[in-house]
Image 1: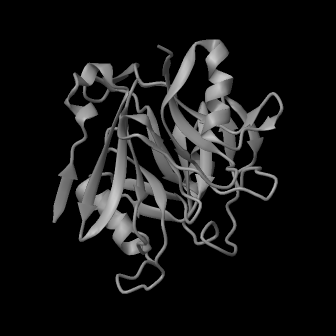
Image 2: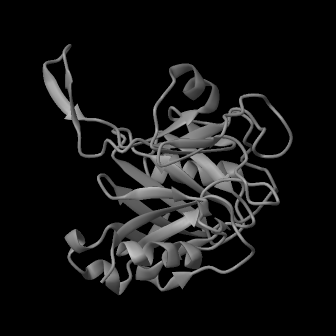
Length: 259
């Protein structure tokens, strides 16, 4: 059973909102989901002029001289003790960490893992010679890491994490419905047309199987990626939410004009 709790901010004209955030319930567990549609200015953030940002507040401070502010933000992938990204990381077209395609320990190494890619093509239409039709180019993609490496996909922003939650409509083969591994988790799924990214954080401890089914069966995202677990945090001003905690590595957020 799905229950939506609609905050007052969502009663405002939708054209004024860059992001739509809402609380929801799925099978008795609480989640918060934020939808970002192309061509919103969705970016990844890791390092500023003085090193890693580490917090949503530091990103806000860096955006202020540029006349920007965050409409939404979330942690966006695993990281080392010094906050460097684990696996592929691309920011504004510059790759600072390479893709990792081998298996390994922990959730990141639970293959298949994947890459969340922001192409920057949200407002572009592509002509399909086979059908004679024009269709929107994908703005966002979630792709299994080895497939991503083989295709040589080009991303303006990219972060690698793992495991994949949903792969072409199927749940990760290692997930068990009866698993008692419960944790606070966050992830991202992408719509079939690549024009909407769905970011979700659990407000209760959930297992991977339940979390993945939320993306597939409720949010209708055929591909979804786990971003992290116990450190999961969300910045959603329209819900008056600004999670605190230890310094973070990669973060993802939507930038809008200040004031």
